[in-house]
Picture 1 (cartoon, helix red, strand yellow):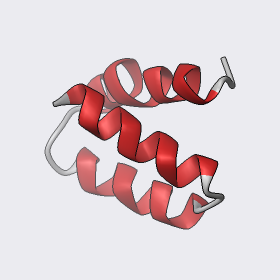
Picture 2 (cartoon, helix red, strand yellow):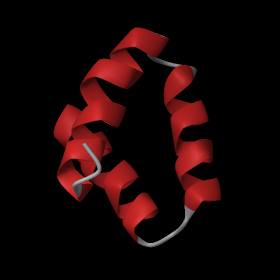
Picture 3 (tube, helix red, strand yellow):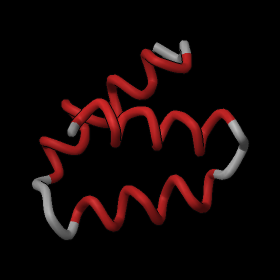
Picture 4 (cartoon, one colour):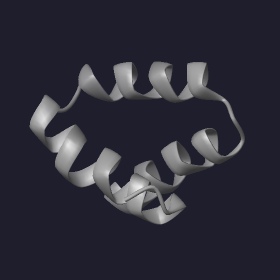
Length: 52
């Protein structure tokens, strides 16, 4: 499941859809802790698109 969220977030960012990426992150925060969001979704998405 993490991979799906990671890829969706990366797709928003690669398409320049920052607002959608933020909304997606906010939706995930309603179900998951902030630490999980950063460690398991945001950081891998940044590696996926080559930012980190």
